[in-house]
Structure formats: structure tokens, C-alpha cells
Length: 257
Length: 257
Image 1 (cartoon, each protein chain N blue to C red):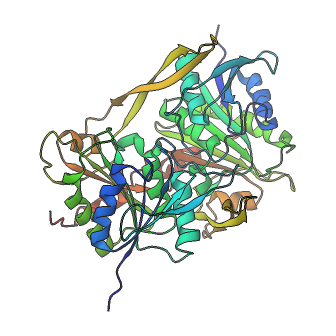
Image 2 (image 1 turned 90 degrees about the horizontal axis):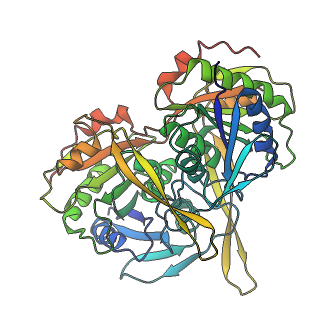
Image 3 (image 1 turned 90 degrees about the vertical axis):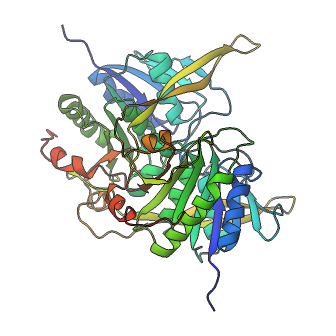
């Protein structure tokens, strides 16, 4: 008798977000589901971990047939606690993160709590995928994502992923039907920040981070292109940040010290 | 008349840390120094940004001849605010982060606020370097690092760095003299977590994150090897996280959707 796959579900929008509910619904069709998710929104937390204060991890009962824990920490903390305290070192067969309310394409992979949770899963040698939808609203409609998520998870469980890699999957907005799946690279894009300056009632300045996403990439093999053309973008991501191509030129520098 | 280089100094241990004081002392020998650093310790914050609450940025006067600001946000927020509000879009010639009290070699690059600040500098197209010392104590001795920092900064300002790359520089502990500089790759290592479980006075459990650094890499071209052998490790880092080598095999998958 083959055992059902054990699936860890995590996110960064918090355990009550509609996006994680949609992901849990898909995961239940694929295996036994355990959820460890933040007790409050953790968007933009990147790969932060909690080292200066203790963490809470408490069982909750939100959806039938699903083991669920809320965690006071970051998305990466959730994965670490899941592996260590919930799975007790017996790693799950799949780690999926999301569905994020909002895109995590291109450079956003580095700021995103959703993607950082998936990266942490991969560091733990668990096949891992992050899912995000181009809709930032709380009542975003995740229905069209579901069959793609199921198929991508099945393919990952069947084929495996190369050691040290994971997948970053983004869905285009719901304005048009999805045309299919494109394997992509991360577009060369960045945020052009603009801090909005305000004054508090005590006449002291404070700043709100705002910004505009700037795509500097004309390539048709990028995730930005795929999403703009209503494809699901699938980018393989690695956590070895070495710029291997830059090593040889640095070796030609002469350090006078 | 050639203008002095404008140097942005940032860190994650906070603006009062001895490590940033040492870095400022070196930076003053190289150009005009502006410091934007967190008002409280931000270790382990990774590439987190502050999006759910406003930020404070206030001028302080700690060291003579240095323009200094403390910021209520993360190390990455500090760089964004520096570029946008302090330099007002006129980018500095160099962004240096640290000196961190503790190593940021290998996988630590992804958890480290020090390195994430340098990564953000590079995303902003500023030549950027993170510096860290293998000594986690507050009264760590940074003296032996200084001549290496000066020389590495001079080389970066002279030669430039490849677009999309930055440097991660780690110093061995002070137990032996430094043997020299090695250009390295990030070692294949990870943290094996072990959460310490305790009970609060109200009988509720909480967890402290602890862990052991596990090096799985026998290569003599890694940063872990260099540091163990008392060399300064210099790793070129990139923020394109695409696993380009995995794209071709993913393109052979057939998605049945």
C-alpha cells in the first residue's frame, strides 16, 4: 500500500488568508496536509528569522481534516518550526507556499516571505514551490489557479527537482483566460522607491514606503513577459547566491595588503 | 579637482555597534561618509522590508565629520531611505555594510541583514560590499580587518564590479594572523535547527531558535575552507536567483492541463 504524500503548506499573508485556504484545498486532493503559517501578515519579510525573541506555535482548527498551527514568527520560522517540531525531523514530501495575494515575480523573489518560505523548504532538501497571483486584494479569486497548482505539484512529486533548486510560480491576473505554462528566468527588473513623507500629530516626520515596479528586460523568456502575455510563469530558483561567473575576473585583481 | 567618493555605510547590528564604528573609521580615509543604520539590532532580518507600518529616519551626531541617520526599519529599508531621502537619487559611489559581529559566510548570506543591505545597494546599481568578522561578541576586535577593508574598497572603486554582483567579505577570528585574501564560492552548508522549548509563567510553551552550522562541503575553493585556514574570504554574490541550469530539464516536463 502506498502511503499518501505528506504536504507542508505555509504562506506569508497569515493563516486566515483566502490564498492559503485555496492552496489547502488543492493540497488535500494530493495528500495529508499540515499547515504552519504566521498568525499575522508577514509580507515583505524576505528571509528574516526570529533570533532576538522567542516564538509561539499553537494548534488551531480552521479547516476539516487538516492539521494546522499558527506561528508568531516569520514565514521562514514557520518552515523551520514545522520541520523541527511538527514533523520532528521526518521531512514532508512537498512544501508549498502561498497562494500569495500579489505577484512575486522577478526581483520580488528576494523580498517575498512567500518565496523565502519555499526557499527555506529547499534548503531543508524538501521539494518546494511558491505560488502567487497577480491580485493584491483580500477577496482575490484563486479558482483558475487550482488545476495548474495541482498539475505542477504532481509533476514535482513525480520528477523531483534538482538539488538546491525550487520553483517560483506566478499566475497572471484574472482579466483573461490563462494560455498555459511557461518555464522562465527571473526578469531584470527592480522597484523604484518613493517614500511618502508625512507628519505625525507631534510634528515629527515619518515615511511610508511606496514604489513603482520597473521592468528593464525586453526578453521573451522572462517571467514578466510570460505574465503580461497571460501565461503562468514557472522560474526555477536557487539559493546558492555565488556569482560564479565573476570569480575569474576577481582572481585577476592584485590586493596590495 | 577630483571629488571625494561618497560612501554609504550601513549595518544590521544597529548604529551604536562597535563594528560600524570600525567601518566608519576606514570609510573616512576613503571619502565623504554618510551613515544610515538601524536604531536597534536587526540581525537575521534577511531582505525584509517594512510595508505595513511607517518608518522613522532621524539625524544623529555620534562621530565627528560623519553625516549620520538612525532608522526604525530593517537594513534594506536603511539603504532604500538613504538612496531616496538622503542622497535624493544621486547615488553614492560605494555602499559598505558591517562590520558584522559574526560570520556571514555560506548560506548565512540569505539570512543576514548585513548582506541584504549590501544586496540592496547592488540592486540600486551601487558598488556594494558586506563585511563580517568571526567574532559574535560586542567587544570584538576589528583592528586587523581595517587594512583589508581599505584595500578591498579601493580595488572595487578602481575596477568596479560586474553588473548585478556585489562582494561578501568575511574575516577569520583573531586567534591567528590573517594569511591573505581568497576569492571563493559560497560553501554548501546549512543550519541544523534545534528549537529549545520552554514554558512561560502562565504554563504556555514557547521556543528559542538555536542551531548548529553544518558544512557539507569539502571543496578548498569555498568560503568556509578559506576562513578555517585563516584567509579573508571574498565571495562575489548575485541577486538573480534564477537556477538557469535547471531551465532546460524543466522544459522537458509535459504539463497535462
